[in-house]
Amino acid sequence: MKVLQQKINLLAATSLVVGNMIGAGVFVLPAALSKYGSIGLLGWLVSALGAVILALIFSKLSRIISDKSGGPYAYSKDSFGDFIGFLVAWGYWVSTWIGNSAIVVSIVGASGFFFPSLTNNPTYSVLYGVSIIWLLTYVNTRGIKDSASVQIFTTIIKLASILVVILLGIFFFDLSVFPKFNLSNDPNITVVPIVASLTLYAFLGIESASIPAENVKNPKKNIPKATMIGTLICVLVYILGTAILFGILPAEVMQNSPTPFVDAAEKMGGKYLASFVGLGTIIAGIGALNGWILMTGQMPLAASKDKLFPKVFGRLNKKGVPLLGLIIGSILTSLV
Image (tube, rainbow, N blue to C red; front, side, top):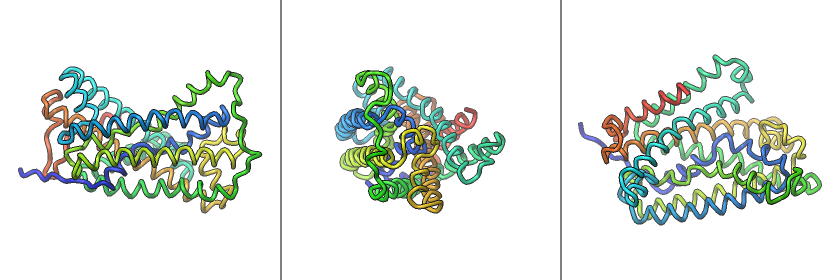
């Protein structure tokens, strides 16, 4: 069987980075930070600094090893040998299909804004969540170009919904609503690591463009660009979004809000704007799940080529997709 190797461009690679980082969970993270006060913004700055440093490292490594997929796995194997490479590939693969189940839960939760029965009825929740997993698995089996198209579309929608809140929020921003620096009873030096650890989770996915490296056009140039551009976009969106919400919703309101971006949108523009942002939250989760399902196939594929994963993960369909690898990953996610 002739295998077609599809290639994605800079826009698609950047969307993969942004799309994998910004999931539905990020839309509720400001609520978790609000109970600590505006020191949460300092947490964003600390984790953003670390994220930018990591992005620079991945950019440099992707220039050194530009002709091989696997990202963290390929770099670790090249530097430290098969055993360390295997541990990285195994750990990354397991974390993706387990983490995908958490993304599905966040999608179901966000969908409850429009369809309350999805969150009130466990049967509906499971059927809806599993259906999304397998729909996106099917998309990924059609080739990385189809997966990239979904990623570009969902990334545009999710960024638009957040930017609407940020831009309109400038006109509704009230400094008197802005929380005090530290609302907890703990010293600042104790709280900063807590809020930084909360925000660091939002930067998982920096490495996304490097994993399907063999499917990226001009990888030595486009992977570093996608990594840095995607990371900087997320840094700006996260920090500005949280700061704006702090100036629109009182801390006591935001602490109890399951959807602070939606609540802020409703306060500024009524139910229609709230519905648009709510839809953006769902699409953000779908886009993240699409990208991470791609990772569940690409990482073991890279390891299989080096005979560190079973051969089954290296079998490609005519679109150049590791079909059985995707199916195995999605079965495991569905079970979780």
